[in-house]
Length: 475
Image (cartoon, rainbow, N blue to C red; front, side, top):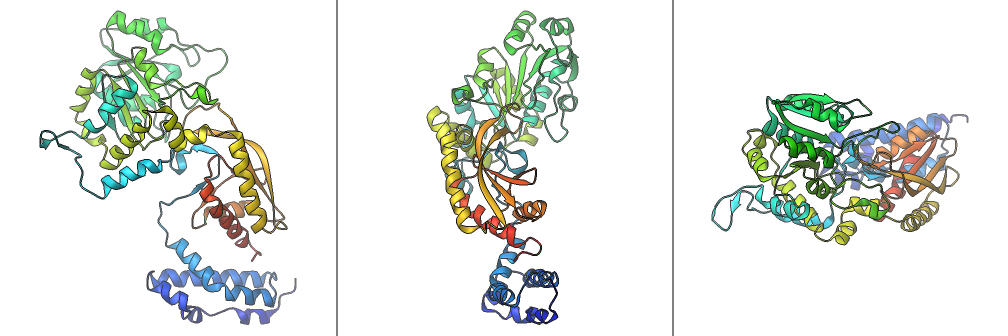
């Protein structure tokens, strides 16, 4: 399209925009530099679209009328916090990169009450003297899991490190080669064990380990047997592993403690909800495991934490380990975890009110209804010449290093752009005031309804409208 140079005279000046009433109000609550930058960016966008010959005079006039709002929106985005809320359209329920498990609103009420007031964090109300922060969680963890004692640290890697440091420093710990996993961020079981001061003795092979492999490795320096649940991967085919129940035979025979790292620990039988069976913490305790460690922010659905449960003699020793202070949790984690665990006292309530469990157990009928609602909102508000909207079948994932083979049937909104850049559109969605994280596959954008809440639908619609407008040559 031929460029009309006269159109450039319609571009507003920075000083003129700064005198707009709404912009002046914005300057009272926001740094001037940030507002000026937002103005210049909007002007540059308008100038580029004119230069590309995409806009007519009446379209420019319309944009200019809306310019204060566009500037305010852009300034608000620029002024937003670095750590911010996002919409999870990926369908990965426990998404490590975007916050893992969501906290229940019921739990948030307790966090708010504790965070905005003084609390008995380390004060024994009954005795009127200093108490222990671990006491607030121990009883309820014992009640749910059946263990003798419990304590909580800031994540599961810290839990494993503390357990090994307390029970096996300068001694040998036997573990299957097939369970020497990497737990994320390049942190590996052998590295954690080395930091703890324990000596790694790996037995068996990657795909096959037998009970006699463990027994043959036992010496007078053996401090513990370690079972690591491979929650973030599976070895299929010609395989063999030793269960905690089988290792109990050696534990009893040689009087050696048995430790199990469940990784993404779970407190209910997920197979009841059409998911793959995942060993529960209660199973480990019943199988005679002396100390069990697991995460609080994965399948449990609570805050980031490393939970340790087991025999009292070992837990009490851990509380005296100097590492415990470095790994201790704060009042926010304690209040969030206690409120989350209370929901587990009734499994039905836990599945209904803990967002992770609710999303994982959501029926295809519920997802279909959500998809139809969002589809209708989009078709009413999105120009179908620029973007085609469809409801399609797909699969969600559990995520968070849990159930790696599990594919859960779901419903997605699939967006097909008409001669527009999919990569730019996906980036624009991430740059929204509330970013929208999606899946892109074969030049299609997918929004999985399993992980999008209904009260986020208007955010999604507004974000898609913004994403299309910001594409080069589109206004």
